[in-house]
Length: 401
Image: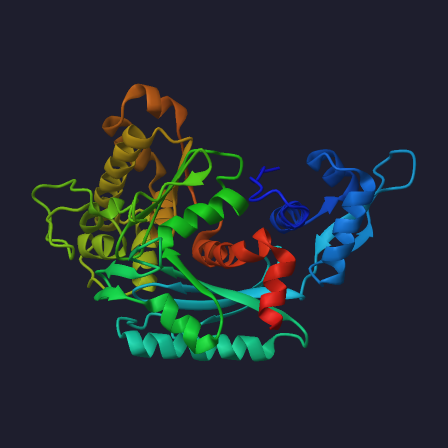
């Protein structure tokens, strides 16, 4: 169980903290027995019973009989998320994709819409209209009485942590855009926004291949390449929230110009367009073409094998630099990079080994994302759920006002 610091010292503060702790445990793990909550939180059984009853009355959790699993005595009641009581909207915006989902407490994706896959989403007004319209549609389809408590947005750009301003999204052509605020106003919901790789790291840490690891690096991206970094289980954001822009590490002095203005950035050497270009395909021709190149490489076609190998080596160089810099437990390759890694794992691992020092290299594991294309949706939902998990009853009261 993750221990959270109690802010304040009044009885209301303590109760709010305890309610949030129970709801967080149930949300993250899917179920918790009352006996386990009693042992983990150090509270007596009657206090746990009162807290669970309050969450049950609020429609956030359900109680059911748990299996005794061979133990003598009456089994403890199990606490589970209410599957349709509360939900958030999660948005994954990419350069050429837009996915909007309704995600319930407990992390289940209840409904989702892929909005015109492969479309160019660089027009801000068109994008906001499409997201708002899809969100409205998902809210209308929700069961009667289900409550939406927020919207989380994953974006391929640099986000200022203090106020959510999207400072720079070069592959969308956006600079200093209050994207989250505009969408929140349209939907009359609190909207939170974060970089896609940061949210991928959050998702993998709580629900994916990085579960149980404290020092995590996630590399992901479709056109641009971003990095989500956890140190000691906490996001590494930097002073303004701009940490993790690993796609703009300069790895190839003789490389191509990057949209950021530099030359030879990592994202000019890896990613979907880099592989398509190496394979003689038209950059920007989409994920179907990208996967076709990987499939042909896997089938042994020499031209495509060589193209995949060249891009995989640059990916390994990037991984090695991150291993040296952050000494992580695990480096996770997400999105198209994960697909490339699964097809070229030995090449990536060899290049990473050649680019990193022995000591940190011995401690790191490389893996493809366990969540695949849903990582950003899961991460955006987790971000939107944070206020509810901090203050369950207060958050519901604000949404009822």
